Length: 228
Picture: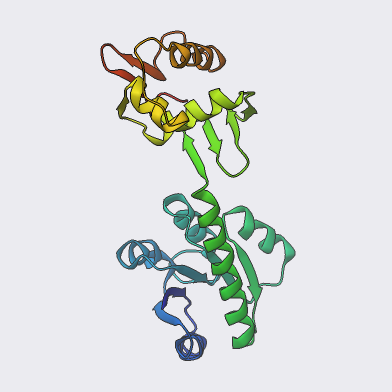
């Protein structure tokens, strides 16, 4: 069951949408004023928002911007306005879709399902990425970017960075790292990890070892807050 927050001051339309969507997999919660929408959103945490633009108390564009500042919840604008400028403005304020009134309930249902499906797919894709400040590791295609620029890493460097990043904030010994990277234990002599750490630091301007810290006598620690 998906939870919908419908911000709509037309009581008749709100009742129609609530009844129709309720027959499917949606539970609808109606808010009839723009100036109460944000507080209601924070208390109810819906899965998707349907937002009218012409609302008492506060314009829907402002509501859309407020919601986007605090959440990535999918927002579908439903309005009687037909100005293309409003559509562009709504999307620029952070809306995900835009439907003009009058709308057939089955069309609204289809658009909601498509929006939620796309959001879920994006959420699954996000699990393939690791982000720390300006650093992004894409496990799906094995690429790394920092400050929006691609970083060239060889296979060993990429694996090492990934192992460290997946344990961000935790100290990993050389033994821990070698087991995860190669399935072998540290013999006390292998300096390959230290050498690779040095190369990573050079590539990420980490001369002070703030991003990848050395914990003397224990190993290395990837600092999640240092990648700005």
